[in-house]
Length: 620
Image (cartoon, rainbow, N blue to C red):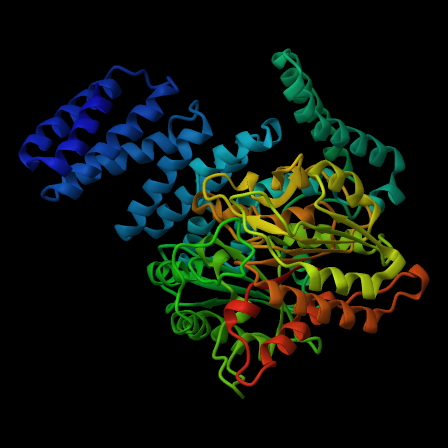
């Protein structure tokens, strides 16, 4: 009944008098109060009932005259639901903990706020993500969106160290990617110390990774669930045994300060956290971890400015369908200048670079949509921009960076390319010009090239593991409410067919060097409810085993895509050389950076940022 009256309230509030609406709100509060009273203290339903009552009380204080007593009552219900009803599912307690934490912060009680948001992070870890299918886990994480960003902001606001803030981020964001990394991470060091434990661990995680596929095909769901729980219990026993070995005390755990710093040996790693509370950068170098507050990086202003980039583009974009609105270049230039002033310049001014000039960006929340690599002023001769100061790479987390670098030390790089192109599509999709990219690949790779024109997704998946470089020249798209179905548009039986994020997540490439995704939005984070998860094709290819991924934050222009790709491969192979398949160290980020600079500077007036700006490097 409480819910019915609340719905009536919301409808009347919009279309009738507030007095009539208030009657239904008070009725909803009365029914919700009664539900709380008749629910036993040890009943898990008490948490949901208290959370619902607290929400109704807050509506009353928000939409009508503020009442301190009612407000405190709502805060008390949220706090009790989060902290006392321990029998309730974490998915119900987490939103209560977040709301209670924010209310305590607003009331000048920072330590209690930090405790409650820390509880929200701990409860996130109790969601048992290993027991869920990837699709179910995405839906679950959508319901608790923002935990990582808010808890990190609260930790920094209450004086916690940069290391502690990073550990919160590593615990509570990119959870899905972390699960795939755990299933695939290199255990050669463990194998060298205790081959039997390594065999047991590898066997168990292999069985666990196969279970979701079995579950989809089997009608005996409970039997599969029991098997899964049994395997997880065995895995915990094996992990406990591994942690008893010297040097493995932190096996598969969140990194500590020294491990964070070790991952910055090739250049600083900068984690930028934005929330409605505050914005900060945590700069990690091989010698220090520094927190740089970003007071001018306002969350609402960031949201407003990034929305302009969603509409940017031109008729040659590789979108599934063109955007309805085209942003003026002046607007985009202002967005990039604002990002430079409020975020990137303060960060770079405080960062000690290495001789390589490389920097890795880790982003959480809204800032994950920002083209940090393109920030600044790009008038002729200006050096007040990111590209003049550093060579940018993106990575979703320290855990993924550690995973990719671990595979790099044991994976030989062989120069062979799988080129997948789809230039013509059935309606309503527009045809695109991939001829320049095809010619570039043929000229550079010759006999080491396998070209699959107009290929089916199944054919591509079968061939991907055979080649160290995969280049896709086709349409791409990002679905706002279902990022797992984001993908590359191919062709099957004369119809459009999609190679999706979910498809790529099932790949385990043992020798993947480069995935070049020359399509629209392959690194775009489209679902605001899953911003902390970095679910996009570029991240999926990295987790599939590719050390380097070239992706796009928005639509790729046909001409720009071809010219940048050609310059990239020529530079890469000129520096590394093919040399009959010998192992090489690839300067992928540097080759892309220089290729973009070359394209950006070409022509009498240079090229628009809308053309060169979308291309980014993800990886080691």
